[in-house]
Image (cartoon, rainbow, N blue to C red; front, side):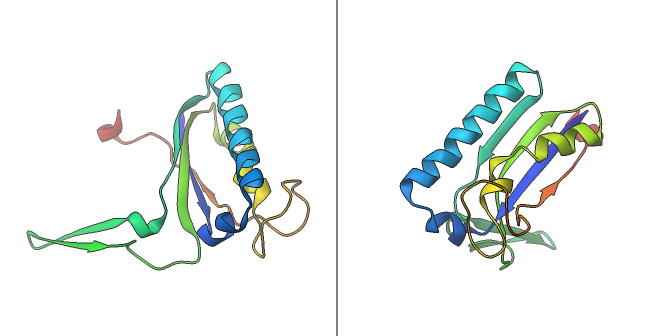
Length: 135
């Protein structure tokens, strides 16, 4: 079964990391992707550009409206995603717990990646591929 893992974070916290810390996070992502791919679990994934580059398109009564920026102002932004193969929700949760952002970022500030301290603010949403339009 396919699960879409949506990775949320606060963009300003990423910007607070120095270049060496950012490189370390990217290295961890590359390692995880390689591990998941070797196990046949990784389908796709990517980092999204900052919300300042977003464009929102709305269609109401046949008319479209285009605005710059995200649809809603929120504390956390969708920063990326993983699409994975998992046998069940438990396996998807196990994979999600390995996502580096879940260890690197916390509600108050980024930490050292050790996973100690406050609760992670990276929220992982699970979506199974059940829709006929997606198959």
